[in-house]
Amino acid sequence: MPKPQDDTASTNGRSADSLWNEDLAPTSQAARTWDWKAYAALWVAMVVCVPTYLLSSGLIAEGMSWWQAVLVVLLGNMIVLVPMIMIGHAGAKHGVPFPVLLRSAFGTKGARIPAVARGLVACGWFGINTWVGGSAIYVIINALTSDMLAGSALPFLGIDAGQLLSFLGFWAMHLYFIRNGTESIRWLETYAAPFLIAMGLALLAWAYSQAGGFGEMLSAPSQFADGGTREGEFWGVFVASLTAMVGFWATMALNIPDFTRFAKSQKDQMIGQIVGLPIPMALFAFISVAVTSATVVIYGEAVWDPVALAGRMGGLGVIVALGALVLATLTTNLAANVVAPAYGFSNLNPRKISFKMGGYITAGIGIAIFPWKLLETAGGYLFVWLIGYSALLGPIAGILIVDYFLIRKSELDADALYDHNGKYGAWNMAGMIALIIGILPNLPGFLHAAGFVETVPAIFDTIYSYAWFVGLFLAGAVYLALAKKS
Image 1 (cartoon, rainbow, N blue to C red):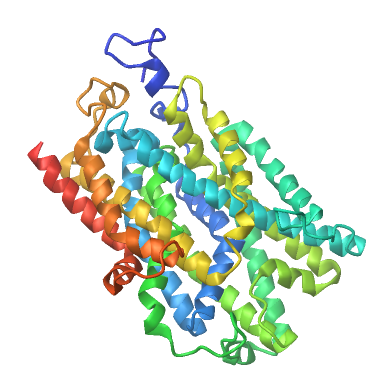
Image 2: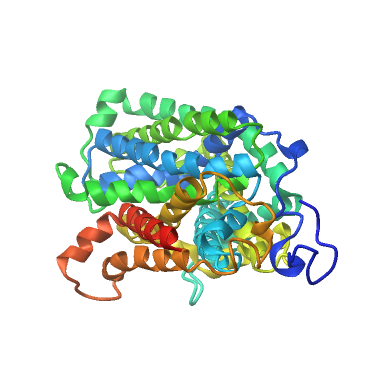
């Protein structure tokens, strides 16, 4: 893709300050260096993190048995793998990042809306993971210094000064990789993945030894959220839980072209994702529930926060465990929660906002959202945050899949993607209308779940339980109908 020759427009009408920069341009053949092992390592490094660990424990807190929780995690990731590979196809074939791909379905200006929406969700995840990593640092320092950092909560923030400094210290670690771009992130993911798998298995072995075997571990009752047993409530929470599991990686299902644009081939991105996502997620879910169940035997109560668990281990174990948690959180945060918003914010004004600057904006927003508030309860984490944003992202995925495969037949006009006056136009109203219609049915249920309204008709709570699926299929169908008429 040649660079526009002046500050306003090139000879084909492409606007340099609003549509193009080096980061958003199609990937050159020389930069297509990622093989299937790179994608598998990317996913393993993202999967092994504290929020993933909390997923299955949160499901047990809502009433599932250990095997039901693992099964739901596996099923949810097998479902989300389908749009992941489909949308990833566009990146591997055309070499464009997610915000540029959006221009085909939403128009060159309209694409900014879903790109920023995806980016803001990632900012939320960035904040959550940064808080988790900072918490691990906080526990490590306190373990080494006899609680030197412990203190009273600061006004307004609700956390003490040591927690705040640990949070900011871990936040600062991300800036090196933001400055050095996606290749530095790939390097970190590749080398961290085997170490993180080894640490997860080591944690499982520790729990097995301490609890006296898997029998004791997995026969412990589900006394997670409120101290009482809640087994036998599977079907009452299955649908919402499955939607939450899909929602967990619904973010990456959208912006996966940000990574597949570097693929050597379609085969590499497909095999890498198939190997790297569903099975490692299920394995880590099993480790989570097995270890958490073991803590009932070991400590007399369930400890489902791995940071708190590591803090109880004592000795050298706490340093190793929490060091692994810091690395795991860093690898996940960089790949899953920096790349997408960095491209998304760059897409707002490519001339002034590079990938690097977009990453710095992401980091700033991640501080401002007070992420520790989102993790106060398992229910709020699963059923408000995860399902809530899946209601927003599902429609975008549906529109992209229909546009790319059914309308465009996987063919894109590269020049038109960088031209307000090209075939895709500045605004594609079919995409905008389909997005709105896809979101609206889930809005009442979200407002109820989040506590903004006290009651809504029961049908809206039911619809909200299927939020990602409702949004994906409804928006996709509406877009197909409108696009064919235009």
